[in-house]
Length: 277
Image (cartoon, rainbow, N blue to C red):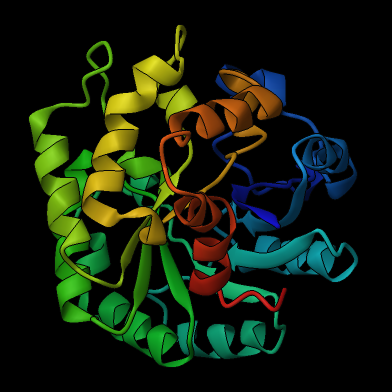
């Protein structure tokens, strides 16, 4: 069973996708499960994780409604204002739906790099961990120290680094700082990594060979048992397409053992998000 650990849906007239400016005009239209279904079938993807794309609880509720009517969607990573007094109430209410698996603050869009270290945020993350919820860390390299501190402060919180922390490519080289900091995060046993988003981060000319240095490093420091494949579709469509990225990921993984491939493309996501599939 192949699991896509990271994809998005949106309905534009909901009105809370503030990041959708003209630079992403190609994907600024409704994206719903019926649009994903043929792509999933083409790659034999049997389950997905729908990840928030707007900083509102209302959008999380929208995703949970979609998941309730679509067996392909096995889980939802939503948004809650982790700095607000009502965060715990929101987490408890959303958790009444078994599809709700975790939260994702849009850290890359928050000017304060250390926002996630605010006492209220850390307290609410600790409560989320007690509830069995996870944290998707949408970070760039500037956030490495903060996320490492979160991992050390809230050791029971499962954290997954989205898009391999968005490395800055110089050709195919993601840089020594990125390598060192990813290894530091990997030293925390509750921190995982998503093999996703790399086509967009690399830009034109991406290929298995161009992305291999990132892949090989995350495998070396996390191990396949803590890496999960994700499409980042439909954002992926700005730099490629679903089937091509899936085939590229398979090419990157061709030297892994059969068990390691099962972890990368299925079991890691199923275990991390506690999917009932």
